[in-house]
Figure (cartoon, rainbow over the protein chains, first blue to last red):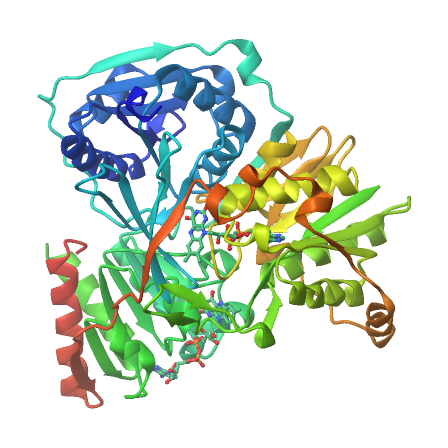
Length: 335
Length: 266
Ligand SMILES: Cc1cc2nc3c(=O)[nH]c(=O)nc-3n(C[C@H](O)[C@H](O)[C@H](O)COP(=O)(O)OP(=O)(O)OC[C@H]3O[C@@H](n4cnc5c(N)ncnc54)[C@H](O)[C@@H]3O)c2cc1C
Ligand SMILES: Cc1cc2nc3c(=O)[nH]c(=O)nc-3n(C[C@H](O)[C@H](O)[C@H](O)COP(=O)(O)OP(=O)(O)OC[C@H]3O[C@@H](n4cnc5c(N)ncnc54)[C@H](O)[C@@H]3O)c2cc1C
């Protein structure tokens, strides 16, 4: 049964007809696996009729082939049509591996497909590799609030499936000379019916998803009151960063829940995570410890977060953040 | 109307102990609790029952060791009507596919539900895959990341938290809904509730009674295999700066800016 399955697939995502950058992270991962397995890399993308110019982006970033399921019903994510189309494609083409992003849609459609087709699925992977002898996909993921890491295999069922934590790897660089093929597929109406209908959508006021931000300025109980949140917001505004918060800050109503980082909030791994007035409880660390670089500002020299930071600044956030903001604003004016 | 809440028993503390030699998690039954998000799911069910004009039957279902009866009793203390525990060594080691398959087999046996609620994820395995996989097996739509839930004309209206905002969706009939913390504020058990829970008996169902194919449940039937477990090493070799005087503050700020530049974000 295994040898009948060929090819590495990634599930690319789009919103409003534009490819989401998380797709390029998957292509980076997928390319490495495809080269190791000597299999072609296919990017599957569902949506309403995407133009070639947009699909070419996926080829430029590493896909040998783009498989585009296009229908008006696929413009936004709905679980049933998405999974029905993907199940049909998997049955037809029998890929060996399917990777998706661990986003709200990826984390919904992948287990739904796994449930329908009796497939193994590993959640939220931060590391993927091919085992030398067996050629199996080695999937490594954090669990138990980041306290443990587990490596997981799917010995028999195909495709082997994993969701991959956004920002856990760099996006593939584009190369517009790469060759590749675009295949379009119009799914039959039977696959597009849904018992769920979107009735409205409100863009979050802080429209930039905290999980997409390259920089997160996070504050905790040390910020002391709601009015002081402007210190974080001003700095974040200059850097095009998102504002994050500990549960203490969220529970006190100083910051919205959508910005809560940690076990019962969001998991982020930006290029820079600046934590001001956050002690570093294990539940907070669970949501940010895979960040590329962590900077902590805390008055307590014993704050646990210091152990997890590249730069540990023992000092008062009320003097440091304003000066930092002023200096960055001034350097912006000069240039 | 019938509502089912899925409840997982999890270790209370995140400081899981690990047996490094065997790569397995050491579970101490003594300090097991209801998965925190399942309390939010239960609270949503209790509120829907309070708001309903018709009688609502509220059941809870858990798969776990015999001791997991305690989390079902806790749910009854909070207001659930009946608890079902799936317990058998044959279920042990199930991955999310087998867990969902076993839960689905039980649901087919115990009743038909207009709404099945679960937590968005459990604090130990943390996959968030059980709810969607279960929905697929029951051929129901799934609504994940739910931050609010209410009745709609023919089904349910659910507000979902996505990366870039909130969407509101409606279903035409029964659904599986996986809730976030935002969905509700769990109540505390009342004295009367605790008394009722003490008197209540939960129904325990084993593999034989469930009649599940051994090829569908437990470690050996699971598509995924945990091949190793290890402790992550996130401890960093930090550079320490003291910023307790103006010169120190200045140095710290310069250093932060240098990192922003080096990372290409400034
Ligand atoms: C099941 C469960 C889930 C949880 N989920 C989450 C979660 O998702 N996210 C989360 O964050 N927490 C979560 N928690 C809570 C967590 O345990 C901590 O309580 C919380 O993270 C602490 O927030 P804090 O660091 O802001 O507050 P504190 O621990 O009170 O720390 C405040 C820090 O600010 C410092 N400080 C004070 N004044 C200043 C100043 N002027 N300048 C600089 N530093 C200053 C102090 O030294 C201190 O270190 C969870 C807990 C449980 C039990
Ligand atoms: C370190 C580690 C990593 C793992 N990684 C994976 C993996 O990547 N893929 C995989 O398939 N399996 C994995 N497993 C196995 C998985 O944890 C189990 O299958 C478990 O039964 C599902 O747990 P979860 O914590 O992921 O649940 P989640 O899917 O996160 O739970 C979501 C909700 O489903 C309901 N629910 C879950 N379990 C039960 C239950 N037993 N009884 C009643 N309701 C329940 C609850 O409402 C819960 O809030 C892993 C296990 C470990 C120890």
